[in-house]
Image (cartoon, rainbow, N blue to C red; front, side, top):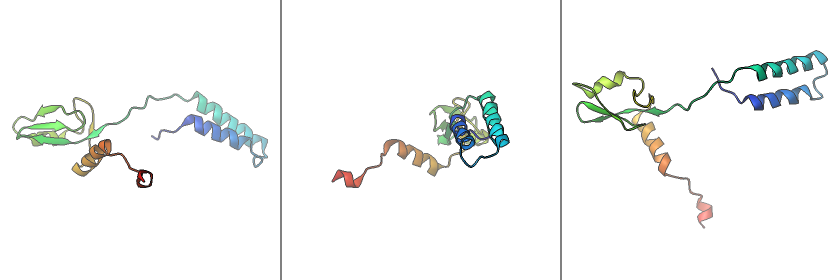
Length: 118
């Protein structure tokens, strides 16, 4: 599935229907029918997907990098490597250590325009 901006697509279709390149009345009718179908299509509620990874905290505990909740893995923290997502916040555990560090640094570092600093 792919999420699209339906309003932008509708505008695109309306522009296509009214261009000088569409000489055929049936093509204009087909485009207007497509717009009608697009407007009638059900909307979905999209949610932002959180990503994280498990960090070892001691021998038997791990911490979710997204929500910081700690979980006990019983006899081994490696137990949680089989969890695809955090049971507490739902974050998908698909980030490498490098991706996590890059994302964390991005929260704190803002780009600086060297020319503007003067």
